[in-house]
Length: 447
Image (cartoon, rainbow, N blue to C red):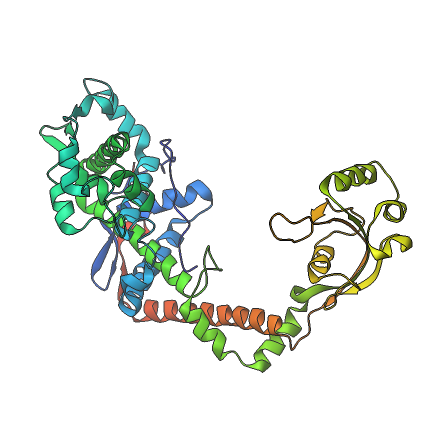
């Protein structure tokens, strides 16, 4: 495998832990001298076991090592800008990884966190909150400008973020003493485009909600650092970052969860696919190129929607299609029961536009279509059509067609990309200095 399972965890219930516990800060492996901690391996294993009870710890360790090497190579070859293109609309890479880290920790240790929260004087996270005075319009003006001002986008510059850092939305008491605060900048830095729109719209309830979420995330990270050590939490974050970068690397190769996303690398490989490779793929995968060659069909043309609905209701009640066409259709072929004869894939029904042929080829045999208004400009009277496909004959797309060339070249390019990634993974593992420690070979997991 080239990337781990998608560790999406949104709920508090904890994942069952293995029976024994390994010291969190002990290295399970060293990769070119840099440690991969047992906490990361065991936490990852527990998440894997939540989806597959038979998941092996050794396989998890192997996966994390491969991901560490692949992620480093991906950043070196492509850079984070290419790997994380498009983050201006979504969340930034750092925010996405932080959210994954908090979600993972909550999923694994939520019960213990809740138990400790119950020991607080107010028996909950709300008892830590210390509301700050509401921000005034004048204060918000220093960050967002005057309301109604023309903006090219909803991003905040460094000067605006610096000013937002001075505006406190929420204060909170730390369980072990001291006080923390959430500023408007803390919230603004963690928004996608929808969130930034809400901030510029000065939605104060949204700001407060986001501030409360930041306190909850802070508590998860603070609790985990006190329980397992800051280094262990940081190492798990790096594991999640590695996973995200490997998934981004796969997307660049046209692989992964969104194979239809654009990939410049896949485009380059597809352009290199030869005609012989296309023919060979077509021969292997001919079943993928089935198409409808021709259909035998009838239609009924009605002057308006009311007439079309009336005829459709009669057909739904069992009326004979040909008889209804002879009685109600305004088309020249009404006398023949609306017969269109055989309509081929690359032809049009006699005397009818191409859109009707398209409708026929999307209709299942033996099923009367719903009434369809014919294309016409606004305000123009347009007839309605009801069609019935009586028979359909399937064939194959021509081997030398452009559609076959496009599909086959993309598929062959994906095979080439997968082979490149597999070869890169093998090469990186071969060249790396990998030491599996005693903790790495143990089968224990964090409590």
